[in-house]
Amino acid sequence: MAFTKYLNIDGTDMPLPLSYDLSLSDVQADSSGETEAGTTQRDIIRSGVAKISVSFQVSPAWLKKLSLLRAKPKLSVSFFNTETMIRETRDMYIDGFKTSLAHDTSKKGLWKVSFDLKEY
Image (cartoon, rainbow, N blue to C red; front, side):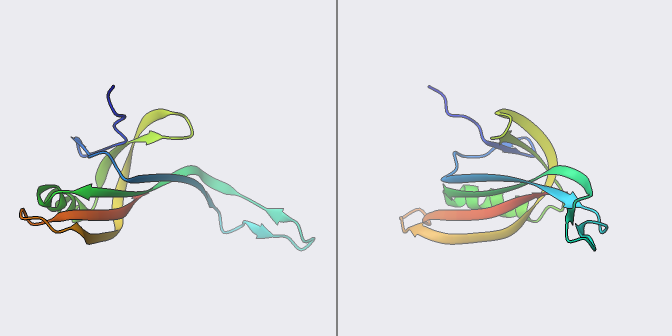
């Protein structure tokens, strides 16, 4: 049985994540908000903007690869959309990149890496 490939960033399949959290949000126009009558008015100008919070447990080699991806201003991300159950590709960037030592080994450790992928 093959595992689902949840993420592919710039043509590289990512390792199986420890956690994968997809949220889709709407972008509202400045005209949205509460009316004088006290009702809520939503003027949606963009729907389904993706944000993916993900974490991995990786080797030092993968830590280096992920760190290099973090430095890029724009990434082509193919991800598993949990709402439609199909893969989609969107332009994104990495935000909130965190690393921590998960386990000390003789080969420079096992690392936990977490970050958010945010759609432009």
